[in-house]
Amino acid sequence: MKSLQLLIVLPARQDAWLEIIRQASPSLFKLLNRGKQKTHEPSLAGTLCQAFGIKQQQDWPLAPISAFADQLESAAGYWFRLDPVHLEVAMGGLILHPPESLQLSLSEARALIADINLHWQREGWEIQAINPTRWHLRLLEAPNLRTTPLDQMDGEYLTPHLPRGADARLYLKRINEVQMLMHSHPVNLAREDTGRPVINGLWLWGGGNLPACKTKFDLCVGDNAEIQALAYAANCPFIAPPNALSQLNPCNRALVALTQPASDWDGNFESHLAQLERDWFAPLLRQLIWGRIRYARLDLIGYRAVSLTPARSWRLWR
View 1 (cartoon, rainbow, N blue to C red):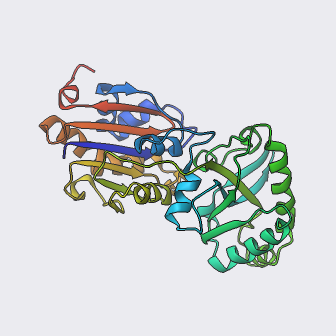
View 2 (view 1 turned 180 degrees about the vertical axis):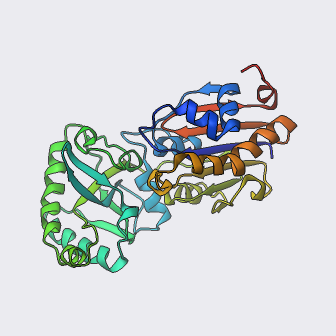
């Protein structure tokens, strides 16, 4: 393999990063210290777009890319993702819980979407979706609006991350209207009766026009819909992640994104990091030292990014 870009999503708000990494993942500690520091985009959405040579519009434009991959009726126009979420009332405000935590069925999603679209019929807004937790909104013109990627919102308070721009107030008003409609919707009443979280929020993000997608990779590996959509748009082969680097299909240039949300780590950061050490970080360091990988970029989303060559991997004094 000539080159590898490895993206890892780590838990947010983690104190004493380097000390934990030093103890649980010595190979990762060496990779971070011996590598050359790179400009780091804090969101997974931005990091993925940059890997595919996509420039930021008002947002990182993942919505039109995922709409294209979902083969919705038209890729033309300005697209947003408008994903269903659960908003929890906490002492500091509303906290967002992402779509993956909802266990929303397609029939539930279709019932909610049908009534939301009926409410928005006069405005000409229409949600389109073929996946229960991946909803799209297409507009004829681009609004003056900037949003926060959903991947930065798991467990976060809403207020600091709400849409910004001249059209933000209008969009928030319309979304708040349907959130009130959702409050008493039969789908949510049934979910309450069975102890499941209600769908009481919609998160707007990823706006843009469909960009040209290109890639330097000949294999894309990932565990979320966004990297799969990017691979589809760039006509790049895509597979689900193997259990370890040693099981990766032979190729020249690979992009591997291990992006399972931090909530899946069950609070045991050290043991999960130790598993990544055994399966990914230690083999990556060895293959760099042996010269089997000629270039590697390591992105720890929300923390830092480094690039490495075989020569850098030998910098024992770092």
